[in-house]
Every structure is written in C-alpha cells, then in structure tokens.
Image (cartoon, rainbow, N blue to C red):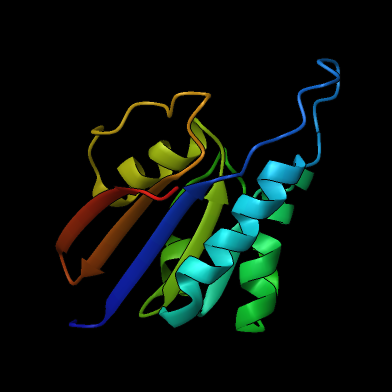
Length: 146
C-alpha cells in the first residue's frame, strides 16, 4: 500500500492560568492569536481532518484551522492513541491533531512505534510534529513555530 498519511500534531495554545482550580480553561488572548497563526501556517497545506481532545483549550486551538479548511473538529480519546480505527479513519489523509504537553508527543511516539519524544515543556506551545506514514515507512519532522 503506497497511500501517504501525514499527521500534524500540535499542543493547544497558551491557556488561561488565572484560576488554578479550573481544569478546563480557555485560551488567553495570546493563545487565541497563536491559534489564528496556526490557521495561517496551514493555509497552503491540505488538511482533510482535524482532531482535538474534548477540552476548551484544544477545541479553541483547532477551531480556526478547522473553520478555514471547512472541516468539523472530531474528538479523540487521549487515553487511546493511534488505534486501528483511527488508522483506518485517517488513512491517506492530511490530519491535524491538537493535544496537550503529554498527549502530543505520546501520539507521535504511538504513530512511530517508538518512545522517542518526551513531554513538551509547559512553557512551549509552538512545537509541530509532522509524521508522514507511507506503507511501513515513517518519517518525522519536529519544528518550532513562533
């Protein structure tokens, strides 16, 4: 099988930390700007599907790109990454996946089948993992987008 699937994995943008008891905060103004910048980054890149965890901050991060690409945001379970259903659902597509400081590198590792990437530093919101899968060949690029 020679179809190519490209996964773009990002962490949610900057979240509001003003209330430490809030487990589901929104993005800050800076975070909303970063979410819009992600949409600009993906402007010339084909995106067929957008996935997010079921949190306000990840949905807000995904929303601008999903809107620009005219696709619905689909939810994924961060406790069950890259299972056979997900592989089948995304096969041959270009897929944006918005997650968290721990789930984003774990997802990249799950696709690669190796434990290469540690959790993202809490201060880092600009990492982009691009994982390309063609048949049994898997390549990854890690970029930092400001």
